[in-house]
Image (cartoon, rainbow over all chains, first blue to last red; front, side, top):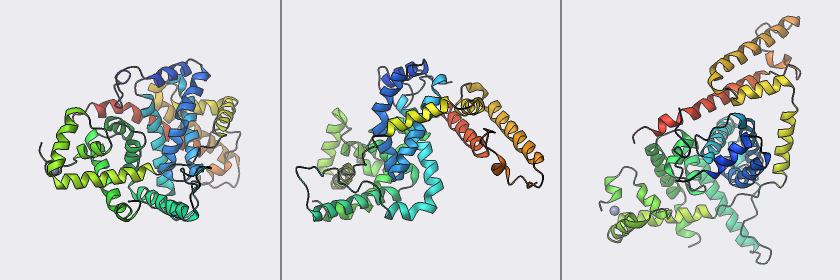
Length: 206
Length: 170
Ligand SMILES: [Zn+2]
């Protein structure tokens, strides 16, 4: 039913190391699962955070992704790139969560604390002023809101394209659509972002 | 080259360029076009600005106890009673070709359990609206779990559809 390893999901030529690790997990090697966990935990949680924009929820969903991967290890077959499989599960969970929470928590998601008020560039030896921090936080808030306003699938496509640096073909596999549909999703999403963030570009940092 | 903005419905070549993912001859070709096309150059500049803004969005750090919590859950799942493990096996497809059968079996078993328990409780809601309430931890098969199982089965079946989607001409 499925083609061979690395023929799905825009995988590059050569062996999918993650798939090899997963095969070892299937054979009972827990250390290989630890390697996969350590390698993909942060990118996965970050992706989910950018999707749902609530850190505890992102971590909970990431837990569920890894649990599902572990529980299905016995029937694992390397028919898709490992990350395609992982992001498919993650996207499925995130889209479900967004669907369920959209109306109930929309206000809270946009106005409430998000757990990332501390700018990444704040380092002990070079503390920005209070004003700089406020400006930075306001900018980050605008970016978050611009992303949050995107339709769910467009958001997922942009996050995979921008932050996970996925090829169109892999995004298509994750979202279960054609490459041309992904290109269309991305083009519309970036169009919306360019319009929504134009004022920041014109009068912001530059 | 022809102007991408005028000739293509989704000129992703401009997105690719702004993302630094255009290389070789395609890159040179587009750069020559950008030098003479104000519209494409404006598009490229705006896209590059958005790209930079998105770069600045850093997610929070992942909790230090993430792995510990995950392993605890894995251990708890391993220590779960047999019926929960069976439910999990059905949920996550230990026997792939049997998904539809397993789904049907889950529904039948769950239906039997609920029905049986409803009958054994005089005064319970005959409409079945209390099915989730009378499901106890000992039953192991709860309404939401059945629903989740079907959800997962659907998800895994969708994985199988990938190859057909990918093989479609674009
Ligand atoms: Zn042009």
